[in-house]
Length: 268
Image 1 (cartoon, rainbow, N blue to C red):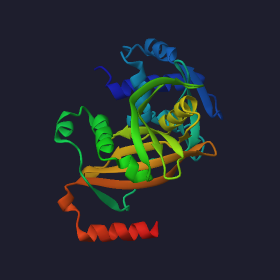
Image 2 (tube, helix red, strand yellow; image 1 turned 60 degrees about the horizontal axis):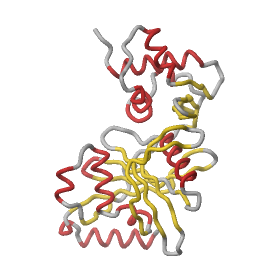
Image 3 (spheres, helix red, strand yellow; image 1 turned 90 degrees about the vertical axis):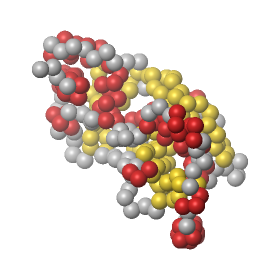
């Protein structure tokens, strides 16, 4: 019986990792061509989209257990881009960018045009549209933010080819200008720290005059949306702030809700 896609992807990544790993190392370089050699060595059909193997490991399925078991204590393996068709398994501190369960959910009057809701294709596109039409970036950061470009495909120094889901530019009340790379994840996909690192690298290279503030957005249960502001601290991605929103008809926002939000604003 043919291998399922996840098992095939896992087998290829396991083969590549074992080919170069030595005990005690924290960086394991490899190239995309190694996936082709691995498929030949394992006698399996090469996937048409080799990039999906890396994407699945970063955001959907994770790395094989045999690989994760070799991570140093307190760390995990991630796949980083290191150049054109070049990668590395890197051991980094355990970080999970996942919505907390005990945060206040802020109700926002839904300003999404019905035609947009009916026409979006896929979770990530729908999420980006909801964020854009309801100005959730402005609300979240307290700035005037403007969408500059969707799906910016480019290269980042020392990383290679990458794609930013959406790029905003913004200005605050003091006149400080920002560039905001947005990473959107829907369904069961997980926000990846390597994507945040790539977004930072792209924006620092292309917009050196602007302060970079990476943002991640995630669909939650009950039609809620989680927003995260992220930053690089001591060479590690950290969460600066997190807020949850729910888009509702204006009539669904009660006096009790408004009182809660007023109390939260006073304590901020």
